[in-house]
Image 1 (tube, rainbow, N blue to C red):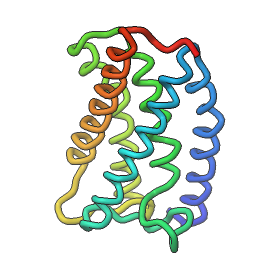
Image 2 (tube, rainbow, N blue to C red; image 1 turned 90 degrees about the vertical axis):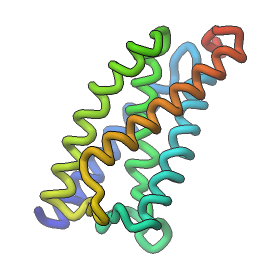
Image 3 (cartoon, rainbow, N blue to C red; image 1 turned 45 degrees about the horizontal axis):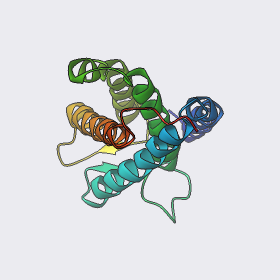
Amino acid sequence: MTKKFETLFLIISSTISIILLPFAIYKKSFKDWVIVYLVSILGNSLADRYFVKKGFIKYKIRPFQRMFSIHLPFDFFHYPLLLLYYNQWTLNNGPVRIFLKLFPFLIPQVIIETFAEKKTDLITWKKGWSWYHSLISLAVKFLVCRIIIALIRVLNNKKVSTT
């Protein structure tokens, strides 16, 4: 695929994520969702920076290439948006349902990432990295963030924040 198409794809997908983001955050439990959003940005950008630094992942086409080695649209918009919807969908579920509900979010993401790695220059996997490494790393990040929001709810007397 051409660099022009790949850039257009990034612009369109980022715009869609930015448009959907306020709808995911601005809900009854606004504070909880802002926390989820900020934790997801922090956790994913740190993990992404680590994997890029170690040479497992490379992003050839990304915004602000000279300033950042990570993929800002994914780390700041796409991933946090998915995580917000996942946390909202699993808000009142037990551990088994929380785990099972991972897959409708992870499978499409891993398929898109695998396609992008094989057919575009958006992402390159190195040093043996493959789709199942992405699946596992996304699952761990989703579950860690879900545990953080569950702990916050326990500290908040098992209630969703109302303001």
